[in-house]
Amino acid sequence: MIGAARAVAADALTYLVTAWCTLRIRTPEIVTEQPTTERSLRGEIRAGLAYTWHHPVIGPLVTTNAIVSTVLAGTNAIWVVYLIRELHWSPQAFALVMSVGASGGFLASLTTPRLTTRHGAGPVMITALVLTPAGQIPLLVAHPGLIGQLAIGCGLFLPREQSPLRLALTPIRTLHVAAP
Image (cartoon, rainbow, N blue to C red; front, side):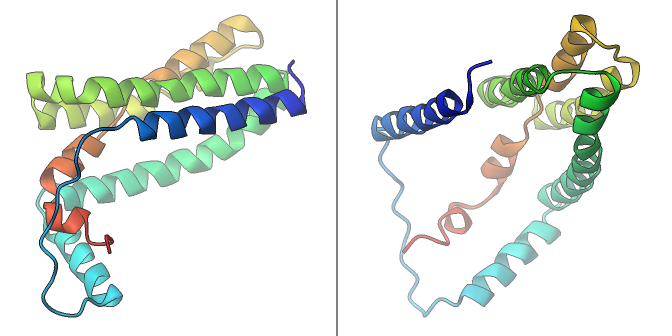
């Protein structure tokens, strides 16, 4: 469709846009108190893992996300072969559908804070966990051609995001543990 050189140029342009947006951030960083004792990387990793696994919300959330991500990564690896070989999608159509689907994650990053405020973190997380595997259903009924591509693109577009909750529940000292 656009060629390799233009694709690489477009990718480079996205990095420039990201850099420009990052430079425009004007929020001052929160200064945390410096530790009075010598820090150890192993000790900090151990403390972070202990905090994660013993937290009543973050521990199960991380475990669930790890299981769902592992299963979905396995199925997604098969998607390319199935959609291109069996349903005869062009590589360009496959890339376009995956790009549209990935924009669902961007939409989720914009809508999750508002949804969490309105409905609460628990219902939003449960909904996200239900929608994530449900997004795979169109793959089971997809047909060659535009209708199948639209169905799968819509399934992948389903927003699913839980990062704001993890950030809200993590103490600020843990978030900045890698800061110099």
